[in-house]
Length: 254
Image 1 (cartoon, rainbow, N blue to C red):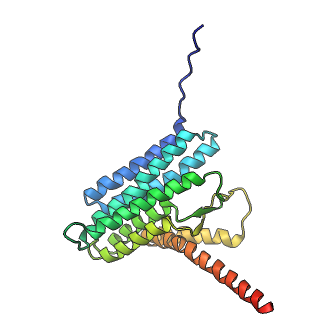
Image 2: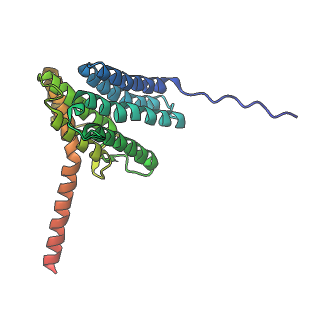
């Protein structure tokens, strides 16, 4: 008796369409930067960030999660948030950083950012199911990519060239990469429930952010993402200060 024919294992279409769209946006950002269209490149990275946030939520809402989708999403993130931001900022500003005879510090820092993005994604994948879902360990790669993209967008919006801001771009790229592989905790917003009640002031703050964003999108988005990036070190410093205060109080009571 012959063995029964095993059915082919398919993939879920809807969430993977969002992942593919995010991958396309990241790829387009690289092409746009190579053509000198830096505003379009920055916007493409931000669009990839939005699409990346939607694919997982769509998968959970439609109960179409899969191991294939998780792996595909991780590879898409590497292109859109690891490789694309580094190449966009390099073409915009870091290419103008003076170098040595054998290497240019600009592309070395760009590579460091890409490597940190890869390490961040690898660490995240190994911690799925064990880490506290309320917090990320290290700055999430989409948030780091948004800081890079918004820096380019703000610079162009204010009339500065990448060459004029090359030193600033070098510092932002370096620290964005290092924050990704840090152990600073960042709130993930994954436990946010749109159906639960929230304080009135929270709703007012959200409305205010929308209003300010509509007035000057590049600057407001950049400041919001920068504040989020700084929240990890600041929160860790605050916890260390409180713990040190308790230790001092306990030692003085003895």
